[in-house]
Image (cartoon, rainbow, N blue to C red; front, side):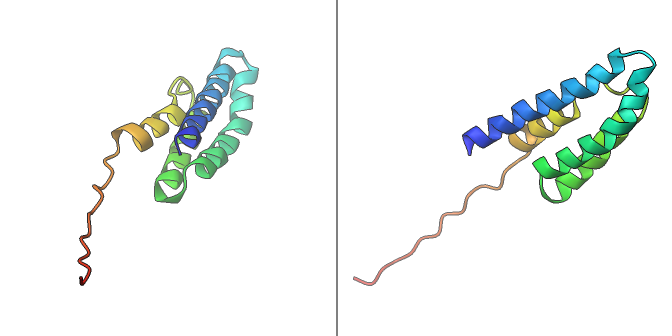
Length: 100
């Protein structure tokens, strides 16, 4: 589990860097964003399952398609939300008494 967690972080940082790199290319960058936005949304949905992954994929799509928002590290923020900020339910202890 720990290796998978950090693999998601590495992938997220890599995808964030790609998204930011398109902003650095004048004229061609906005065209690349049109191609990158749906791909990034698909990758986000693949990396994070469930409702949270779907919501994050919408956010990453909008972040990549809108001008001047490429600097937001959406993948990294989603990783932080999932593994650092999100409260995990406390494990329940169930006592079982055996007849002796």
